Length: 111
Length: 115
Image (cartoon, rainbow over all chains, first blue to last red; front, side, top):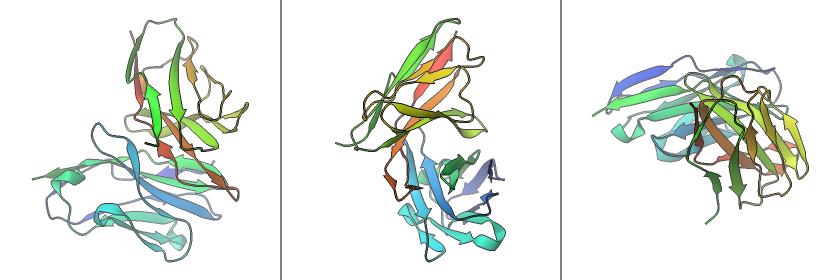
């Protein structure tokens, strides 16, 4: 079975710092890629997704992610984080109709 | 107001008891899923269903059962056979198009605690 790795378990940043969360996956075929966010006390919701085309994907709230096929990666970025970005972030990969989630990265943004 | 509802939000159960978690969606999605979320482990798939009256085991189906009698509903029963049932349970749904899973929409979750 394929796997998804999120190497950062907990990231702590100050407001206005730049963010990059890593996501790597193991499936070698065609994949659909997702980043979900879970704000404290709220539903898991979609930040952005990649199916095909431009590997640089823009999502909500200023987030973006870049699909690098050769590196099996789909890292999430934001140039300047805000206190309201404090949440848990999950990478998900769908390969061959098998959807897998990473273990999640908890982001804490200090005001 | 479309979405996925899960009830109850919090559930307490004594050891040895079965308990059923509710999941309803009004998004007209064909596929529905149950995940278990534990700290540091992400979301692990318990069961999923792509069509009424059919469902498939996920990675951690042991000790759980589901039914899909209606398109809108996908209840999960946590049986007494589940060794470590205390967890946060998430239900999701998605459309199915061209054999490719689309994004999944999630409910608010049910936190189950076994006393």
